[in-house]
Length: 315
RNA sequence: CGCGGGGUAGAGAAAUGGCAUCUCGCAAGGCUCAUAACCUUGAGAUUGUGGGUUCGAGUCCCACCCCCGCAA
Image (tube, rainbow, N blue to C red):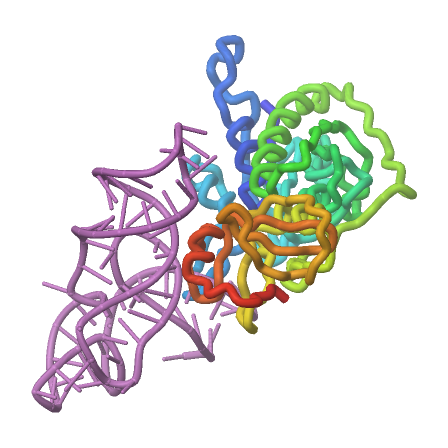
């Protein structure tokens, strides 16, 4: 039975862990086909307004499934434990730290990374958001052999996902997480048989994504409705698209776009068939869900009920 | 003790210390070929909790609970 070390921090890795630990068929005597010998995740961190120390979803899963878990500040500090567990493969999904080559090279079959885009497109921190943000009509999952450069190693497997142009980030995230689990299950046997050819990435085609911050998520109402819609779908719930009204921030959580040719002041709020609508460059955006500063999340209609519509403007 | 906003009817919001209003929703009735439109009427609230000041508190004071934005 092949020994695997899983390294990751976010929910993205959960479906993969589930599949890896799932019982096999009768042929394998009902045992999982692989042995998860160790899970490595980020240390517990304070989260939220009350700074409650919170364990990563991966740690919680590990504990629930009785898999040994370690949380080094620096992963290199744990190199002896990694060696001791004698892994045949290291699997990495959304860990959040650079893993040095000294560790990647430990397992017989090397280290494989799960990445949420079709590499070499969208290397880096936010590949899933990038696909939505750019209005791509396809994205996917790529498995690569890891080398010392970020998202740079040769490709061992790839799964394309078509996009309809309506996906939100959480939806696509979930979908890609599930697909990566299937892709891993499909790919590992061939990898362990040594039958897998790794194909070098076409490096000149590489594009990069950075970690998105709050300023990236501010809505510019002078952009096109399509662009604003993409932004809202890509950047919620994190970091969360927002705008301001009378100097107070308002989060825009869900919206649909409306192509109305009439050009008016971008950001102007008006009512269209009882719904909250906002003018932008080439059309309008119907806001379905939003959250004013200090308030709970509410529908666009609820927001309208309390709003004295004068010449209100989102800026 | 990081900074800040908030808790009023099912929902969203108003209310110089003096009868708690408005919009939406809901119910009944009406208009209409018809309707999510329009008109009439109605139900629905111990104003987060506990104290205090006052002739009188949603409003002022004290304490507590809960929700949320920023920051991390």
